[in-house]
Image 1 (cartoon, rainbow, N blue to C red):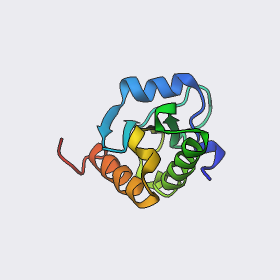
Image 2 (tube, rainbow, N blue to C red; image 1 turned 60 degrees about the vertical axis):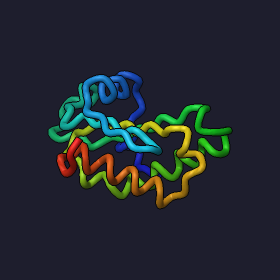
Image 3 (cartoon, rainbow, N blue to C red; image 1 turned 120 degrees about the vertical axis):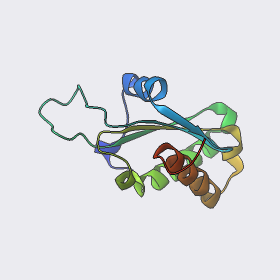
Length: 123
């Protein structure tokens, strides 16, 4: 489970990550990253935590499949939060093939997208 302080909840934060962040697409998902954003809703904090949010539409599958994909993505991001700069906003959008993918395939695509966004890969 992703800790509460690392969850992206506000629609404005999702919009900031998607519209102003960098994007890396993979066959199963698209990752949007906005590095080092200060949180206007948390005054007094010097370094805001990295926060992640997930978008899994009905195109991925029925409710059972969508929830399974979200649980897997939350677990994968929980282990990768330390790799991201403090204050980052991350939005992971699952594409329709993610519904039939297993945990290892999602992990590979997430790792490849994050590596590309963090400067480890070419466009």
